[in-house]
Length: 393
Image (cartoon, rainbow, N blue to C red; front, side, top):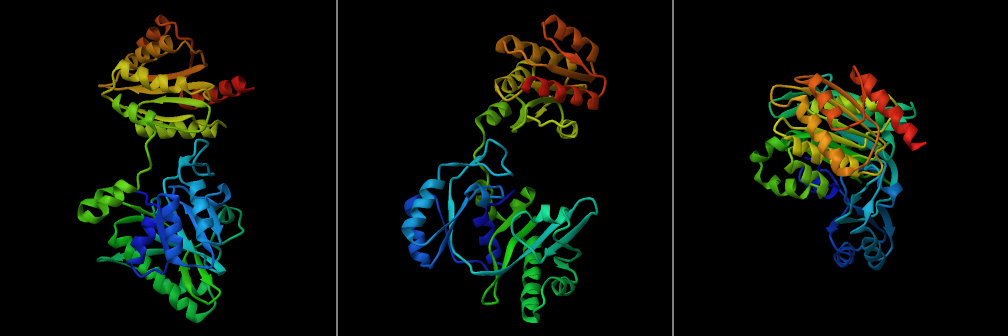
């Protein structure tokens, strides 16, 4: 469960992590009222979406008066914000968070997360926080300190002091930084989190530490232990795409993306592999699709139809493995139905294996579906990407 910034800040405040004075509003009028209560010299108005890189997209704005706050909120609320992390479709803004602006001398970075490869909970820290920290680290322009933490009872332990010494010089500042690290660790355990991130953690010109932005991901399976988090769970979910909801009713997990290679896959794991193969071949997937074993040929026709309705799709890669409950010919029947309904013709690459794979090719031919057959997944992904590039040229 990903939390909005204002939700994460509210929870972290309970764990003693300093935050700017702020309020959240869902209308421009309420935003203006919030600004008057805050009474700052300069305000920051932040669009509340579950994605980063907001500032570059106009999702973070500055205002000098409550009237300017109200104007900025009116422009944001109800708009669609497109950032580097939302894809081309963007996400709707339903609320803004208004804060007093903090006078920053230095930006730090702190996060506690799970390193799945190492099987460890780790603290990440840097003396350079703010935007593009991941890219700066990859380019060697910024160093991120890494500390493995130990779970002892209900407490995360680690040498926080040594990390603080490496990223700040002032002894008094180090003491405050260690306290924040320990409080973040307590929040990580106490809230059953899988990620707690403060970026940036500002060193103010007065020498104080303030969390300017916060992100948090909680374990959905632990909500039963904290009934007070149930409301957050409902409030943290972004409005669902109507196509995704309709696909769910047809036994298909579907999510639109911003690429031009449509994907038809059964099984979430295979779907993720297929996505990566298309990217590795130089393409961009237009969707994620996982056909459930309970889907009928009519259900599959609906899912295939969603892809055909997308004008950005230039080719389709069908990568399925027939099992005991979901045969390849059932999927082929669905594709045939969708193609007849749509009338649209796009290059289709098909890789099928497993139950009734050979018969499925016959079904496709009998339905007049033109397709290219691939023997393995990588070959199929490359062929679909090449076809999309030709169609887009």
